[in-house]
Length: 214
Image (tube, rainbow, N blue to C red; front, side, top):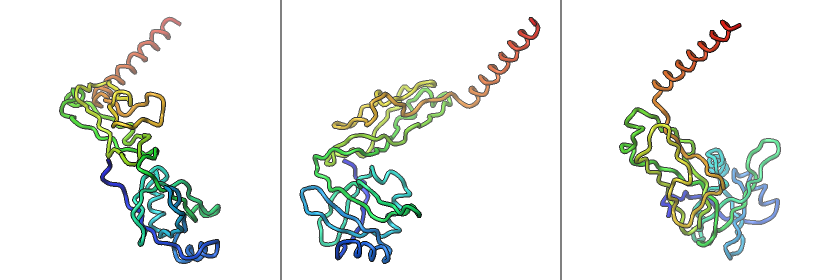
């Protein structure tokens, strides 16, 4: 299970309705609601600057958080909706869903590459181009993998690593059905440049021959 689930700190919102929500915004907070998981909904406030920073970091709607609210047990949540101001596009409200350990969710999992020293392509000066540093997987909330491991042993220049060639953590599966690319081993830049020059020279020779024939 992942060992670095980020915390999301909040406080209980006193009062309900639009009046309490407007007051929260005046106080520099974003009102929200926590629901699901077999417990009653709880109205909360989250500091505006904290939430905005997390939104700008990306993938907020697919990140699992450890919600910490004073007076309540910590609980894992995932955001299901962020309402925004139609003019300023700034967050005005959010909905957080509590998760049971058996709940299936979609999360982006980090990809780690190992054994570069065992890759023939690296020894030849090849360049590992990472297409997807993270992969979205369907996982169980109580058993979230910390990372996906890609073993580069035997990977040579010209090889492509796809999702089907990776052993995924037990109980997980990609959210995309097709066999997409994770990374590839490209030829050294010197060889690519040489190849390009040869292609250009060949193209010029063909053009010259065609001109002579005319």
